[in-house]
Image (cartoon, helix red, strand yellow):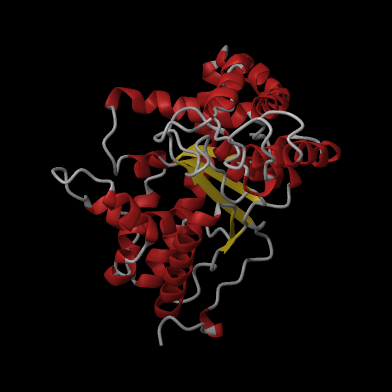
Amino acid sequence: MEEQHNNVNKWERPADMKPRIFSAMQPTGALHLGNYLGALKNWVDLANTEKYDALYAIVDYHAITIPYEIKEMRERVFEMALGMLATGLPPEKCHLFIQSQVPEHTELCWIFSSLAMMGRLENMTQFKEKSARVDAKDGINAGLFTYPILQAADILVYRAENVPVGEDQSQHLELSREIARRFNNRFGATFPEPQTLLTTSRRIMGLDGENKMSKSLGNQVGVLDDAETVTQKFTRQAASDPARQRLKDPGNPDICYVYSMHKFFTPEERLEGVASECRNAERGCFHCKKELADNVNAMLESFRQKEAELRAHPDYIWDVLRDGGVYARKLAQETLEVVKDNMGLLPPS
């Protein structure tokens, strides 16, 4: 069968090519703790190892599959880039760029659309979830349906071997592997089958304790929020331990949202004390939330300082994005040349 591995047509990285990783975020504006813990922290760590040729994109083409304010898009891109750099992404060790400035993404997407099966796309979990939220009068646009094909092109146009993403993207990455395999088996060894690099913080819940942290749900804490805002969000909005209806009721850290967040921000030696105080009702939820907020603010302070420095020099941010785009497009053009040659298509005149 076409989908089976064929060792003859299995891509192998050239000896002079550094292993590549690719990942991306939609330009939703300000970054929140879910973005940072679930993805960006891992991006920073991977870039700093200098083991990879790391490419990270702000995927504005993906963002247009749902209604948006036209005048806000460029600002959203800028704020996303600002947040990424402020939280530690090192532009000297990776390449940050804007998806729409590398048109080879969409060109490869069209080629891949002849290899992706409609039935497979219909069964994508995120398509079902997103289409269920679409206003009936607007209908479901084709971009929302073919979103995973563009995502496959995003990755494979750089022949990236690894993709640091959250667990919710695993199904999309499996489709990318299927498309790469089909292309290789039909046209010759051209693409790797990219593998997932999951973070230990795979799914970060929002303040409601029930849904993934999301700006659209209003349950987020921004990585660049000021200290007072962070404190108020945790003390006033964070879901309390459901076992603690009264101050004297013992709690259960295993099911408590606040304690789950303590695991990311509270020193290891203090965690057991927080859990014990909860189980024994030695202090109320408010004080537990306040301690969490203090620890979060301690971590975010360096981000706020870096953000202030970067915001004073906006041209620097646009320069980083431009330079990243130039590098990314060079790689993407090289890939498209190989793709077209392998398919029997003519090169640009």
